[in-house]
Image (tube, rainbow over all chains, first blue to last red):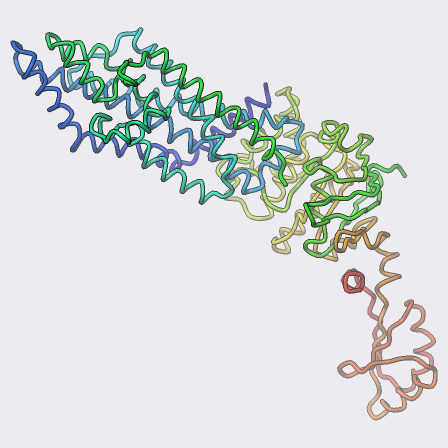
Length: 303
Length: 302
């Protein structure tokens, strides 16, 4: 345990002390943030206000706009946290690649420490850093929403969000570890980071709502864990905001909105429950772990 | 003397390539063992096997009383390894580095700190503790690497080319540290190097070539056998032909070199009768002792 603690601490320090690594690992999230702020946010808000105008009826438009804005803010925040949980864990696990390339792994392997402990230290450090940074983003953004006159989530909801974040971060950490086993150079890992950073926004339907994508694409996205991870986070975050924004709007309309925005994922005409989605994520995690066990046997030797 | 490392018929194959081919040797407790060879001769592969990183294809080794492959954890506790490449983290301070690596061996925090203090004293790292490792000079980095390998007070220290790429002053400071370790802690040092004057300080030397251990002995024995002394005669003006004739009559082979004649000797003392013979014809002479460079080149060029 002591060894795991110190190795994990070392991995975290190596990441945190490298300011540019921290910056670039959050860059995708910042890009999403800017896109939302300058272009996409208004579009999403307009979509909500249109629905309110069409079906909502008797309220004043100022309140409608405020509620719509808050809904979109929380929807965005959910996406941000999923993007972050992927790119940050990717960067932290990247230490494994640089350690292997720089022959640093050797110095761990000649110490009386099991290779499992070394492997766990990379995954654990990614989980810790990912969780802390996502929580930080969550708190700051929620503070921003509050400052802009929005409402803060209730404690039970915050609890749910944190659990969801933890699940995502764990899943992505093991996934990144699996990828890191196969990457043999730092530049290859950098390339992978670029690809992940670019695609994560699309795969999680963060830039563009899943309803606006062609059917073939959404079919593929629904088989990947990212969209479900984002959907779970959106459900937790937007639950209250949805009720406020769409008070008085027919349920059918809200249902369509939830599907279009990727809050609910519909497969074969049924809305997947959060439990089913969590199970799906757990299943993905287990598959990844099995793959790690199989690949790790081959890769654990330095030959 | 007690054998602290005993290697018998050690072999390592990577697919078709045999990197280490059936080598046997032993290292005595407390000695400095020099492990030489050209690049790619199999030195690092041997070290990687001895420090449990690579699986042995065949053969055996006993290190500090533990059998390689069976009691690897005991072996890991009794060896410290300094690699060719620096493996501490550039971005962390020396102290952060040493604490994180030391914790892999020692669970007790207080004891860990005591070890750290002791090692830093021997390697004179006290002033560097809070500096960033990446900002240190090459020699300081190497001393930190050695400190890392010593944190658990191992019995054997493996040094894989510890001074490659260092300037002469840094090399000297690294060597002073190594000498102090041996003197104060009686540590066994297993060294690979490309600098022959460093190898000459070893108690025993093993020379690898193409995966085989081709020579083993003390530097003195190897020099006797493979590096012959040279006698350089400087002839008096106009007496060069006479000198050559004299040598030829006795059947002594000589070779022109610059302004003089060079004669290979099988021992230093052999120079005396030759000098006696030719003293009338020369203005000066020089006996050049065989060096480890000669030994190395003679063996590896065979």
